[in-house]
Length: 466
Image (cartoon, rainbow, N blue to C red):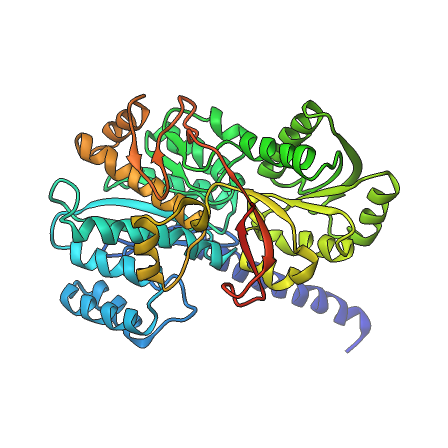
């Protein structure tokens, strides 16, 4: 065959191949972009790059540490065989006692046949599993406590779990799904401020109460009267860190490493800068952006020291703790370290080790700072040890929703009305949960530090600052 005859055939072959590949790609992406409703109370919401599943017991969302019994319980739940689901979930908890998903599913199965009241909790299972579990433990603890006491106005509580990967776009899609589901009366979540900022306008428009236990960006205060949070205003973190630095540590020149991609990080940087100037200190500008993949931690620490810094504030996102730890390791304890509440993680202790020893963080809660109470005792019984501030804040958010339900009808507007009442209060993990007119928690933060210790099994522990 001549070259002249081969050329058209070759071109035609390339066109056909491209068409097949393009059609296959179109089919795959279209198949994964729709909304799929499953039976027995679950809704799958798919997006182009991620999937989020709403599950009350019909889906396995946390695959780590799963047991055959847990999987069998989920199968039984799907089939509506709730007595079998209860038996299997109970057995699974005997093997994995600190699995909050299983405890929630167990209580959901118990409630399934009794016309339950239903709320949802949104957590970043795909982005940060440890933090997702911490939040779920707070919600599960309330559900266990309330259902064992007979429920809310005689009705047991069901909790739907949803993953949003701490992604603002996915969070907005999840919010749309929950707003449309009239059985959902309120939402605990989201975790990151960016996810909350993505979802909150949807909840506000749909008049569905959302209480975030962990999002502290400034803008959240302005998003509407259906948006609340049980974490105190970020201004309290900034003020406490600044006063500690100036009055206690006797430092005054601080550099800041922040994450330019995260609204909460920008908020704390702004609030802390204002606080430190008001207290007589100053910020050393080194443009240390933890979102910059090419950031050289050693260069930034050296730059800070050369410009006269005596301290360094680290404000990473929970999905990028490693970047802050890299800076701490480069610091080698030369500058006094301060940290945001996002650094209250196992990863900080495990990877930071001696380079984070002495770091001071501002957090909403610590078990050793509040003394013995019912929450701490129940948490130790359920989970086999102490919990952290995210669990406590999620507990408080859930308690607030249930207290609002007890005061009125089982509908969304009654919950909002109760929470917005200036006299609203309910006992939380440490103190009463009260809200300001902005929806922010009416409360403050405490200071903790990192010291050698054995509780976390990393060689270091978080303890209240004395």
